[in-house]
Amino acid sequence: MLDFADPDFGGAEQQAIIAEWHERRRAGRKPLVDEGEFICDFHRNRERSSLFLQLRGPLLIAAHWHNSGLDNHEIVHGVSDQHRRQVDYLQRAGEGAGFEVKREVALATRVRSDAVIYGSKVQMGVEVQRSGLTAAAAKARTTKARHAGVEPVWFSDSRSDPRWLGYVPGVRMNPEVPWDTLPGQRSVTIVSGVRVLVPKQCQDIRNGQCPKRRYGCNDWHPDHEPRRNTFADDLAELIPAGELVPMAFRTFSGRAQVLIFSEKDRALYESMVGPTANVQARQSTLDPVRERDRAECVANVGRFVQAPRCEEHGIFLVDLVPGRPYCRFCHQRDMNAKGLANYPDPRQQVWDHHSWF
Image 1 (cartoon, rainbow, N blue to C red):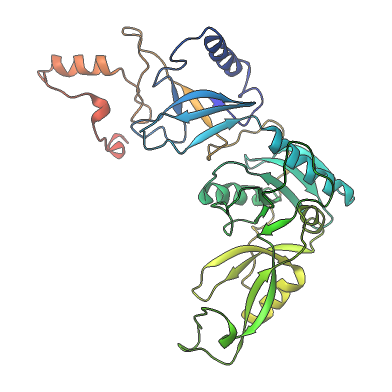
Image 2: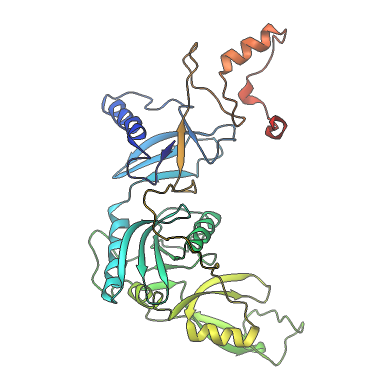
């Protein structure tokens, strides 16, 4: 099992496999990886679960083969210089506010934070995300971090809102800021994700769909607008201090948007609609720091396995059904021996894997 969230991929034997791949690359072997050699642990039950490896600057990427139907999923090892500087920026802000900050913290619930700011009220996890992480993957990692006692906050510098924004506590930073060097203090503004609560009369809410009356009522409802002049530095200071908090803001349709408000705005919101703004999981008794834990396979953090070879034919075994790896040539030969001369390639079959249990 190769763990891309671990610096040595999970151990000396795993690191040796990557070293062998680098040697192949230096020798100019093409292809560098045979299809079927590496299997994505997360998609191991899919028909084409293979991965190939490639270098993108300082990053080692395990990606699905094209036309596999899974080629939007990549597993990344290492961080870019821009990613590292964004973590540096937030670490500097947290330490400037008087808090202890630790990098690359492995949580007891099998996720790893880029950094944790140990605040007076909240242990804030820093999650810098520069890839196309899905909302589902971000929510899964957020829930696990909360169960370890850490409230993760996600940061992106993309030019459009990332897919996870509004589903997990997170912000989009000013995309015009260059990260080829570390920016100065209080130079990176927040363009979305942090809001100010604004009570409005029902008829003044644009495109509002009143939950009480079809054509509106005379009551006041909570609305929100951007919090102006907010810097990424403010989040590293005010969230650990409990002055800014993630909150589930419910629209008239009932959908909850996870946004960041002041603690006063949260109290006002709950006084208007009831105590429904909580997004945090119950605090765990687990130690939030545990060395050398493994991260599960979600989008850019994950595992994959090197498939075994058939001793007779030398090709990699296919594991379409969990726990049943086989060689397609051996499989066809066995079926033909039973009189099934036209038995098709097993990789083209649609297997009901539940029937094997």
